[in-house]
Amino acid sequence: MTPGAAPDATRAKLLAAAAEEIVARGYTAASLSRTAERIGLTKGAFSRHFPTKDDLVEAIIAEAARRGPGLLRAAQDAFPTSPLRACIYAVGEISAAGRTDPVLAASLLLVQDPAIDARRVAPLRRMVADVLRVPLTAAVAEEGYDLTLPVEDAVQFLVVLLTGILSSARFADDFGPQHEVLSVQAALAGLGIPDAAEVVADVIRRLGA
Image (tube, rainbow, N blue to C red; front, side):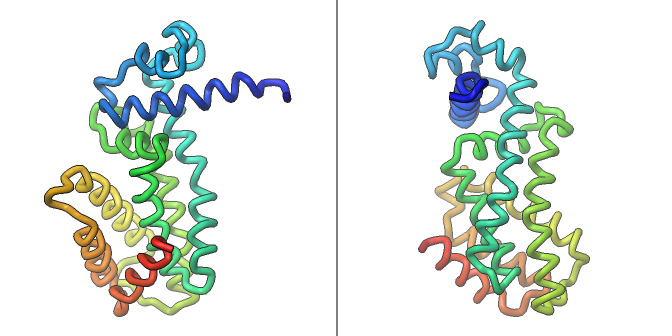
């Protein structure tokens, strides 16, 4: 075993447990003691890794932000010849991970929590923007799409769209998968994508594969 492997493993378990606690109860109601109990540690042992909730927030955000390059590679691998589809695949990929990956799910909740200083969670928002910016820029340069907004403004628009989708997903009785599809199609149409429905349909097929 390499030096530091055990502490790193413990830290990873703590982050996962804390993320699950935040997803289940929200940031304000999340308990450090209950989080420690999830993996059999005392609160004191937990505090040696994360002395405060702010430290925990920054660690979760940093861990989620490190997923960016992997998300981008997966999107580009899914659609190597269509950057626009890769961009929308990344939107779907992040949306899906927000439901299944505790660390990413917790980080997305933290980004939307007004109780947390925006500066602490800004790295995650920048990561999402970076993941979308690369393929969207290529879509304009390589596929010839003529957007109604400058690329940077379009990126921020898609980040807002994704945030809204994740927020609305809490209200499953009113906002279902079909609404998510329609929202993305409408957003693309608003950006000047003439084949928006076809693009979204292609992405949905690949995400479901």
